[in-house]
Structures are given as C-alpha cells and as structure tokens.
Length: 330
Ligand SMILES: CC(C)(COP(=O)(O)OP(=O)(O)OC[C@H]1O[C@@H](n2cnc3c(N)ncnc32)[C@H](O)[C@@H]1OP(=O)(O)O)[C@@H](O)C(=O)NCCC(=O)NCCS
Image (cartoon, rainbow, N blue to C red; front, side, top):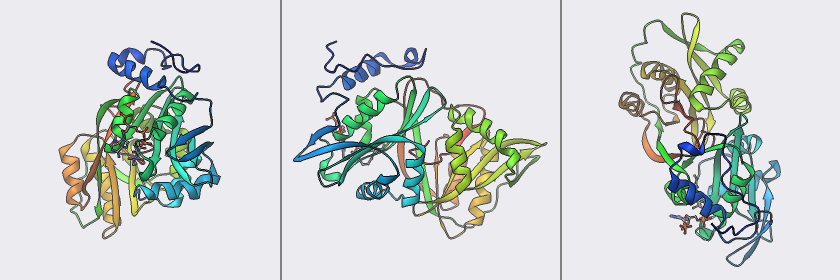
C-alpha cells in the first residue's frame, strides 16, 4: 500500500490484538490513516473558508467545548465537560477568531487501552473531513492501545472507516423517575452506602467489567457521586454511582454480575429520585433489567453503538456494565 503520510507505520495495537480484528477493518484502518491529508504533525487545516488551528485540549478550552457540545444538542453541563477535560487528552480545532469547530478526545487507562469520546464538529462544518482529521491524530497518539467508543448514528460511518467494528448497542434510558415496587432482593444481598475500604473491591469489579483499570476515572467519579454497594456475606458483588449530569442525574457506572443485583442497586437510586430526571445508559442485553428501568419511567430514548478497534475487552460474563459512567467515558 502506498503511504501518503510519512508518519504512519501501520496499526499499532497491543500484542495479539490485531489477530482478533476482521481483515477488512484493518485494511480500512490503514486506508483511513494514510488518506491524502496534511501530515499528522501539522497544526493547521483548511475547513471550508476557515483556516483552523489544532490546539491541545485543556482546562482553558472549557467554555469553547461547552459551546461546541451545545451546538450538537448534547445535554452536558459545564462541570460534565470539565470532568472529561480533566480525565483525557485530545484536540480542538479553532478558527482564526478562536471559535471551536471540532474536537476529539481519548481517555487512556492501563498501559494498553483508551476510550475515545467528546467527538463533535459544529453542524455547519460537518462532513468536510475535520472530525476525521482530529481522529487520525488522536489514534496516532494512542498507539499501542486497544480503542473503544460509543458511536452515534452521525459518527458511525467515520469510525467504521477508521477500522472500528461494532460490538453491541448501548441503550440510553432516561426520563422522570416514578414510584416503583422495589424488586425482590436477591437472597443474602443487601445494599448500603460505600465505605472508603470498599474501594479496592469496587475497582476490581469495574476492571473486570470495563476491561481495563481506569483508576483515575473511578477516583474522579467517586468524588462527585453518591456510591452504593451490593454486599453478600461480607463480599462486595456490585456497585453503583449516581451524580448530577446533563438534564438531571445519571446512574453509572453500575456494575453487577446478575440482573437481580443490578435492579436492586438501580432501585435504590430510582426510589430516592422520584419525580426527577434520571438517565442510565446500559450495554447489557437483558430484557428483565431494561423492562424494570423502563417501568420506572426511564424509557429508551436512543441507542448508540459500542465499537472497538483491537481486542474485545468488555466483560460478557461475571461482573458486567449495567450502567455506563457516560457515553464518552464508557
Ligand atoms: C460525528 C462527527 C464528529 C463527525 O465529524 P465530521 O467533521 O463531520 O467528520 P468528517 O467530515 O471527517 O466525516 C466523516 C464521515 O462521516 C460522514 N458524516 C459526517 N457528518 C455526517 C452526518 N451528520 N450524518 C451522516 N454522515 C456524516 C461524512 O460523510 C464522512 O464520511 P466519508 O468520509 O465516507 O465521506 C460529527 O458528525 C458530529 O459532530 N456529529 C454530532 C455529534 C456526534 O454525534 N458525535 C459523535 C459522538 S461518537
């Protein structure tokens, strides 16, 4: 294959990860990374009539990022964006007078994994190659890591072109929480507030479900969330966090090994928030859990696609992700 840029030398995934990827996806990735485009090193790009400058994401970008996400009707409040900026790395393209045109972020965890998110191009400039350009740069920065993202319908084509393959659907449940009959508790399982000494057990459950140790992310979420655990015989077998987010509150991460425990954890927060706006993004295909959440007023509002480039790391058995922290964070 002819290399169109000097600075790309083939997909760099952790050892063994490429073997699990379809050949066509790897070929698409190569083609995407070598598209005829300015060098990945260049900080400039032409977008329509604008000469855009690519800058690194950082706290100074907060107001611009909030403006950009509002332009695509994302519900994030400024503190939600600030949380992401504090946890990831990425880029923003600005026009000559500092208006944000496009953004892309990565959230690395462990040595060999990163979640991608906060990818937005202002509506009037979409489909002109800007998102792709920032994504190429980000992927290049995250060499040696398996990648995952939650793809919206608008983003799917871009990520597929970049070599990502679908893993499953994320169901975005949301609505005004209403009174429910709490589910029958699972035998021997009690739900209680988290204690500081529960943290290692919580981190271990999350690591299994998420597929990487996201220590910094969990620590930051813990600081802004109410956290509960499901305990059986002195062992922690599930946990859930809830924090203020977007139009109300979000339940997530919610990690449990079975529907009953996940429902018990979710019910605790739902009952405490009757009449308030609640959101829960789930990746587990469970009719029972989804019916329970929907009956509590949180119907399916939308779906996005969980996509990977590299190894499938998300747990499909044992402790699983019944609630995402946020689509961008997984
Ligand atoms: C997803 C998004 C960031 C892509 O940014 P972009 O600057 O338009 O990306 P590009 O111009 O590089 O386009 C990439 C591909 O997506 C296609 N595309 C772009 N906007 C699209 C849209 N609104 N609907 C369908 N396809 C679209 C382009 O045609 C292009 O495909 P091609 O390379 O085969 O021609 C942008 O559409 C967006 O901000 N959408 C709203 C927010 C969102 O959903 N973000 C994604 C979160 S995962």
